Length: 183
Image (cartoon, rainbow, N blue to C red; front, side, top):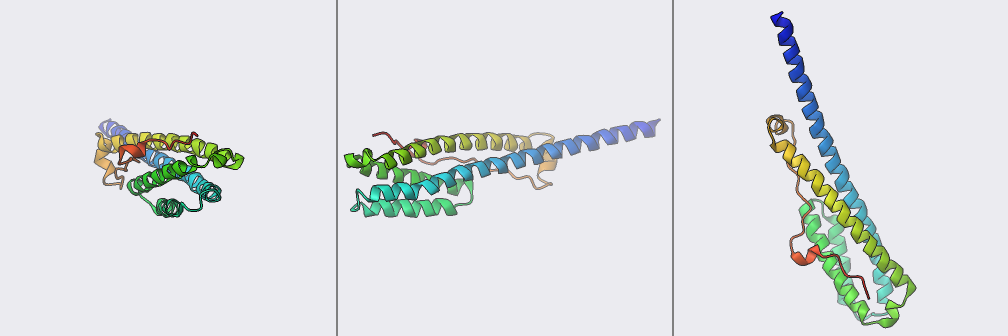
């Protein structure tokens, strides 16, 4: 009888550990998926930017430094791999886009351009989608980090290779603002 009770307790512990491990794996996969969603939105943004720049270039060819900054920061953002690096690069890109829209304000004929208005509206939608993706990613990372640091999961998380994830955070308060695309 004691053997049966011991086996039942052992089986319960094993099932508990399996469920705990699977829960951690599920959160890790959700975090990876959420990061992928951010990548998709940022790629959409990165793909839109050259079209936007080319449209503005036709009207403001003498604003070369603004266009060079956007190209440089877009490249940096596309090459960043960690959430911290990506957040910093995306913040710089956002500031460069604000400069681009400031340039565009000086050209009333550009603001009336249908292609520019369409690109501008697309960028506004993408910025909203990026914000939603970041929010979801950070929520998943919060849940994941909480789980791997909470008892009893913390007892097996470290030994099984579960490491805390970085939040996707912006450093400067000005980077937290969505670029204004209204004219």
